[in-house]
Image (spheres, rainbow, N blue to C red):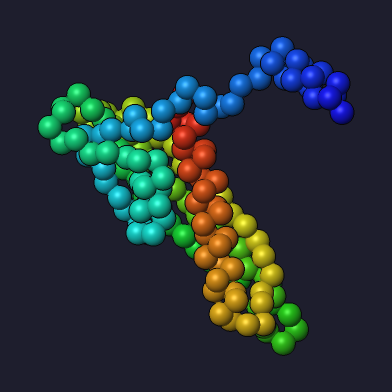
Length: 148
């Protein structure tokens, strides 16, 4: 077992592997103005997780506009007309501007399909979990996008 760990460590360090987040300080996201449009919960989670800071005094900073939307679709019904599956979709438009010129613009779309539950309370809790998971996935994509 010890030989395996030593070989694994040598191969891992010798291949040039490094974490995508190494050397990336996600506390560096400062903007002159932050505009949030759409779903308040999603926008709040994104700005909190990415630690966006607003500095209105510094005119050299960019402006950021985040527009988010969450939709829950009924994707299939059974013979009785009861819903069998849902799909939750989150769309996020990210625009970074400097002096009214668009510097970066990207749309992030993530969705997830799932079965209906008999207990509507359980369904509501599950839909919130799905929303959180999709939002976390979008946050990871935004970190990678802003780090490039």
